[in-house]
Amino acid sequence: MIEVAVLGFGVVGSGIVEVLDKNSAEITRNAGQEIRVKYILDMRDFPGSPYERLLVKDFGIIERDPGVSIVVEAIGGAGQAFDFARRTLSAGKSLVTSNKELVAERGYELLQLAGEKGVNFLFEAAVGGGIPVIRPVAQCLSANKISEIYGILNGTTNYILSEMEKNGAEFSAALADAQKKGYAEQDPTADIEGTDACRKICILSSLAFGKHIYPDFVPAEGITGVTRDDMQFAGSLGYRIKLLGRARAVQDKIAAYVAPHLVSFDNILSGVSGVTNGVTVRGNASGDIVLVGAGAGKLPTASAAVADVIDAVKHMYAKKQISWQNGDKSDTVAPSVLESSWYIRTNAERSKIEREFGEVVFAESAPGATAFKTAVMSGKKVNDILARGINALSLFRVMGDY
Ligand code: HSE
Image (cartoon, rainbow, N blue to C red; front, top):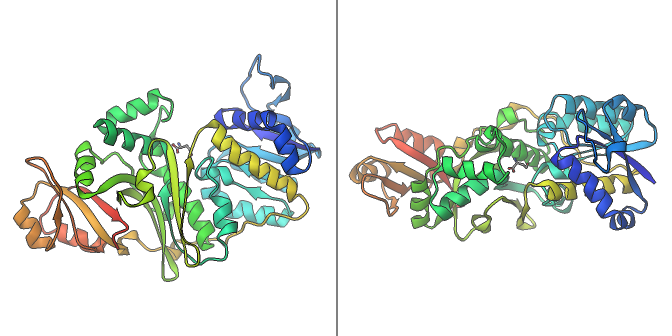
């Protein structure tokens, strides 16, 4: 029998305990032995909870207990969670986490430490919730040279954008609705400003390209500038607006960023709506592989975390190897080098637009507003042209037209 400790009894932590309990027969069969939760660490009390007897407040109890071989971290953040993660691995225990901030900020050093200690450090639940994406990139696609990885990596913003499109809601109304339904946090900053998606594309880039890409290297733009008009104008051009995290190889460097994009109706990701996430991985042998599913939520996230626990059990004596080198800002290039078409909403005259940009495709837009799609050009070039006197009210990259 394997004994595990779960750190944090919030939404994700309680989901992990619930899945381990509810699916114990299947989990025992798949792991080859029983997995039992010995401790749950949380500073809060949960009177009446069926798991009350397992609750502890002192991490030292878990750290010192040689019976606990796997710790599942579901606290979040990179402060106390990092301290517990480091101490778990140092104590020779395997670590499973759903914490994207922890992996994006400290993944390299934790993987190094896990390597030194001969234990597993697994984080399938940190990107894409219940979607298997870490293992496919690290394992199933490992025969490929990956040229690009991009996707809808945040459920909250995808829900908001989908509502804006479907119901013609403005951003603030769609956000309020997402909060009411419990999708968005009361402080939704990390989601709507693109920080959460940034952490996830950092993890995927590190896996795909083998060097730790830190969030500081990756510019992130959220969805607060997307308007209902943009949705409509993009639709008339044949696109939906999606917040994408994207990382693309540019020779031996990586251009990684997060921003709203126009995604063609022909692209599978344009049909990924609501809180669902989707990721496309482009390998030189596999071609495009698209993974779609529940990107957030208690049980989908727990599904991925518990699968990691099972994998850690199965690789207790033959370590499951995920590794990448440390990375540096000089491993990245600014995304402005990447070429694409661009969507621009402006109040400039059509004649001026055509004079400066040459051939463009105009959207069906309302009087007083003009929106159009440019020819393919770099981010630097589009900004140089705009600087000649065209005021862009919205400027979004068009995905795939390159
Ligand atoms: N806030 C995140 C989202 C949760 O909306 O996708 C899952 O990481």
